[in-house]
Image 1 (cartoon, rainbow, N blue to C red):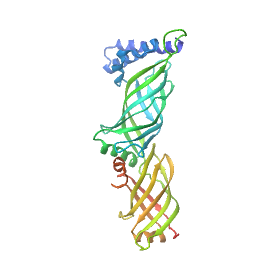
Image 2 (cartoon, helix red, strand yellow; image 1 turned 120 degrees about the vertical axis):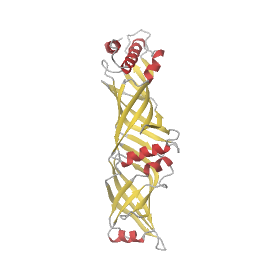
Image 3 (cartoon, rainbow, N blue to C red; image 1 turned 30 degrees about the vertical axis):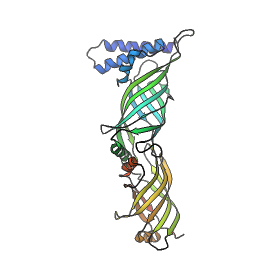
Image 4 (cartoon, rainbow, N blue to C red; image 1 turned 60 degrees about the vertical axis):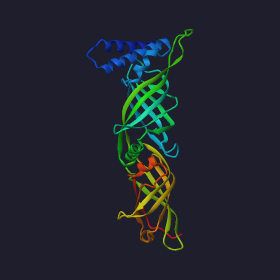
Length: 338
């Protein structure tokens, strides 16, 4: 075994022996020591001891914190009880031991806990990892999140909080499977890699929310038509919507109520395949209204409309809940008859 593996194993064993020699320490620390000892044995033998599975499955602080650079939520995949989820960067802060953990790939089994409710869970495929010191980095490849039984409304409230608030805290709980690479001497029976299954974790996390998209810029008028009976008009316009959050949202086809400055619903706004990625996204909205007062205002001086979610916003019942608190205000300048 090369020096790095010897150092890792020795460091883990010294830590374990020291902790177990101090009876005043909490049981969690003793359990942590047991898991570390398991890792040390595995590094030396090239296999995960069978008696280590139960100890590792409990969150004993091996994974100290989990962070996400972003979170992708895709309502265009899945069904009424599932959706897509992903992240371009997951960072796990590990317990500091020796020269670092020799992890080459990881697979995650994750439950999302919001307001003390386990609202959904997802499982990833194995993905490569990068480890620097105590920091492990990987990605969450597009996966399917399944809503927990009876939790559709609570999951919708979770989405609503992410959309309407400046930030939102929640909890990630689960376990990880990992592949570790050893550096055994040549011509020994120790495998080059071995797998560890079910290392438990629990980590609070806070993500920046969309804060109801406070910056919306009008881009251009695409079309304006008045039906032959003069009772309904359709305005097609493009808007730049700034998403200040850590969320990349794929909402699919959505419809919003269009509300005037007097809080009166004057029509609807339809957006096909609506995506609201981090940063600025240009969307095309088709506004339909039978309010001639709004039509006249648009031709004379423009109007301010607020687009808000309602029961008919989406075919997805989960997203309908999530959009109920969504309110996007847009200033529409004077329009031209085309």
